[in-house]
Length: 416
Image (cartoon, rainbow, N blue to C red):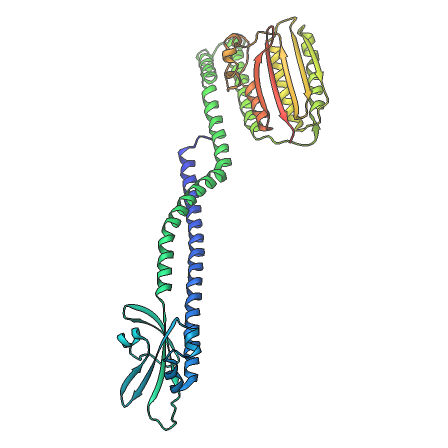
């Protein structure tokens, strides 16, 4: 995992919390909408049932309702979940008739308006009610008759309470999952920014660290030159040449660090075959090796992996140039490219001074130079560049001792 800077961590936290809030709001809206839909659907079903049952009873007339109270009516037997009572309103008084013991014991008032649903509490229980006007048996009867139907809502209320209770652990589990998801998603989303930020920060830190000494040398030399204003250029030549060397060194460092950053973000360009680029690079170094009285041997197999021409050329140049630099006259440099079913294996080995086994993993670190190689001029960035290029292409690179002497660098590239 990439190390997280405080500012990046703050942005990551904000991004994750915003994601979490959005997820919870969306989930909450869905749950609330679903719960409201279910509750309304059940309520409407009860209301419609009560209304229909009351209308059916009202159509029986007063005598028919009184007959239904005996329990012999098919309407009553088919709908045992409903309770009902017949109300007679005459001269300002209300009389209730019912065969239901619960209704009779609690004597609910007529209340409300005919033709409207209502929610009432009777005897500590909730009911959905509906009142329908009933035509009298005798048209000349001055009394008014109403049938009131009661449907219990206790089960609906209990079910909604149970849903609320069961939703609590589910909601907690969801919030935990949403937190994890948001932070993971936030990390994945911000990881490219973090990576670029860390590379930029490392570049600045490395540059500031490595150019401190060259700048001090240049400053000291310039101060010495200014201290002798009458001296000629010839007399100050040594300090001037030394300053120029330090400038060249800083140029090499900055170029190397930029190449490392670019190498890490390198993608594959399907324009050139790997074997073509390696062969071309070997030819480019052949004369250099011959002039240094060193043998450059190449064994290049055809490898059809499509690669970025400039990156592979730079990789091969770094490895071959290193091999030439750290070998003596009469030594041998061998370049091999082997085609396998999984990809290509690119190897550069030499019979030079080599690297102690304990230091072979460290030679790919920036500015690291093995103890036995410090007398040879260099910046310590070559193998770091090579590693960045290889890993930027999804490959791997390793160092090992060459038998009987020297160093071998192996790069493995897999087919996509």
